[in-house]
Image 1 (cartoon, one colour):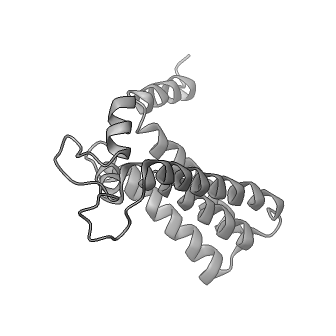
Image 2 (image 1 turned 135 degrees about the vertical axis):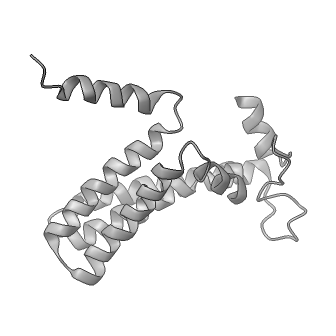
Length: 163
């Protein structure tokens, strides 16, 4: 695992043969050293977590909460693009294993922003945020082998009504 991460950070090709986002072959779009990539990843992740934490302060105002939380959410999820590269990140997000989880998560992000910015409904915004959090958890579980299956089986057992 660490070998693949180090290879990806150092600009090596992944096993699919695609170049990373930060390779020198990208016409100078964004060629960062491995240390700079780690710093950018950490900064983006910390900024995302800070936005999510600060959103709890304005929880009483659902529109501000939705904006801060969603922005922090997107920053935290997108921070791995500094490590893997944007192309690899998108390929992983839309892999056949997690395509539905990604689509639901992105749909919930859009739904929360629509409820907060366009509809201005506090109740709908809170509902959309709850669904967004659940979608983020389900999306995150897709990166852990067999985690979604275990959670599904646990929920079936907990919610089973057989006596």
